[in-house]
Image (cartoon, rainbow, N blue to C red; front, side, top):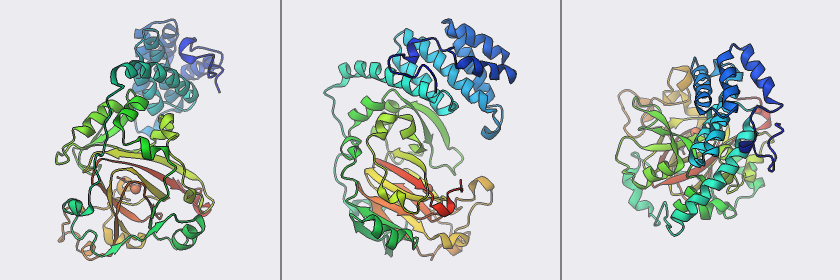
Length: 408
Ligand SMILES: O=C(O)CCC(=O)C(=O)O
Ligand SMILES: [Fe+2]
């Protein structure tokens, strides 16, 4: 990795064009990025307009076609441009702008400069936090204030919910028991009393804690009813802005904001320390595929879909309703024909069109309300629909077993 990533040799205080990066610039010129290279050199000399211009040039390259067709060096070029911009904001003491630039580098940039971005984020976060401490020290608030009874939530659920087969529940389930009774037969289960040692359990319900750890960080959120709807869009906002939206949320509005399926713990490493990979994820001898955050107000809906991996969905804050249909029922669930959406059902479980989708009406499903401190095991390819019933923060752990560890 880069020579500049050690603690005493801080990336934000040293020139960016060190011994490793000329080769990066060389590769960028080879791809025709002469203007980028000229401006990067000016940026390294302290020219903010040139730094912004490198970011724009690389941004255009990232948006010149489908994501998979972008030449990888342009992702590194974008990360490097973000570092230039961050460094110049840092010199001006603008720490929130430093973090914005660095997060854009992490979210959109390539992997080559990731260690540099992370070490710069650590330095800038500490400075930004010092500022925040002065302003908000006594202001304590909770995301979910009171315990909600299940009976009070009934009206929020799709018809027929909780009326037939409930997902089985086990308390403090051993790894052997999990393997034998659920993993090998491929059956879902809710596991309780298994998250007591997660720091997140006592920390993430506290808005103040989240603001302090992540308030200035930029995150991608989804806005709209759900990803299958026309008016759905993605936005980049700060974690503080996001928390304000959650606190002011009226769950009847169409433009719910959801931090959904985002690898937040790769991006914000302090939050990674608050969670533990459940032992269950080692079942099957495969490998971890991804850890994702799902954080939003009451009323978020992830429509009926399936994923290729084993999944432990861990509920840290609030409650969610989850409905599951067996993988064997795919034909009856009217998957979309389009390639990108073929793992999603055309059926809207909140408003089933029985004429168009008659086969789904009497189909067997399992469902549950997942509460704080509980985990749900969803076997691969099982269809699931998820609705948050309160403000909710969950973490999903996707892993493959050794038989499928080459699957994407
Ligand atoms: O929690 C949600 O909204 C959806 C979770 C999900 O689809 C998953 O973990 O695979
Ligand atoms: Fe899913």
